[in-house]
Length: 299
Image (cartoon, rainbow, N blue to C red; front, top):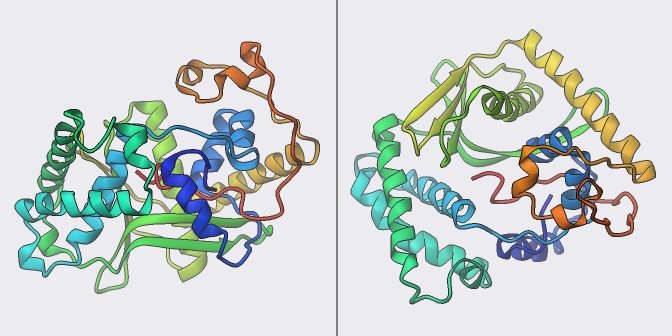
C-alpha cells in the first residue's frame, strides 16, 4: 500500500499507475496497522489519506538507500568513509524521485537544519559498521520483493532489506532499523514483521530461514531470532485470521477505532470517532493494491 499525500508516496503512486494491476495483498506494515487499529488500516489502505513525512522516516529511507548502494561497491571498499560519501548522492536521488519532499521536511535547500540532519544519517551508518563488517558479506538480494499466496488464498507481499544465503543454502533475513531497540511489546511487533518475511520465503523456497536478524542502528544493538517451521505454520494461521477480519470489515466499512497511546502520533486523529471526529464516507473495498508497504514503512 502506498499512502498518498506524503512526498515519498505521491511519487510511488505515480509509478504504480503504470504497473499492471495486482490483486489485494497483505503486507507486514498494513497487518500491523489493522492489529493496532482497524480504522487506521482503513485510513491508510482504503481511504489512502495524506500523511506528512517526518525527518525521522525519511532519514530511515536515506540510510536504507546508502546501505543498498554500499553493497554495490567491491568488498574491500565497503568502509565507513565510503558509506558517508554515499549520503549526499543518495539524498539527491531521493529528492529527484520525490520532488516535494524537501519542502515537507525543510524550508529550502539552504535550511540550516539540513546539514545536521544529513550528518545524523552518517552517524547511523557509522553505527552499522559496529554491528557488521560488510567486507565479509555478499548478500544474495537487497530490497527483495517477496510475493506469495498462502493455501487459504491470502496473498502476501513485502520487501526484505537483505537476504544472505550461506554456501550450504541456509537463509538469513536482515532488517535495518534506524530507531531505537524495542521494549517487549515493540519487540513482538518487530518479530511479527520478520516472521512474515520468513513465512513468505518458506512458501517461495521451501526453506525455513535459519536466522532473522534485526539491526538497530541508533542503539547499536542486534536482535536475532531462529524460527522453526511449526511456528511459522501457526503464524500462517494468524495471518489468515487477520486477512479474514480485514475482508469482513471491508464488506461493510465497519473498521472500528482502537483508542490508545499511539493515537497521539496518528495523522488522522481529527477524523477519528474515538476523538469526536468524523471519518470520510467509506469508498468501498478497493479492487487492487491495498496493503502494500510504503518506503517509510521499510525504514
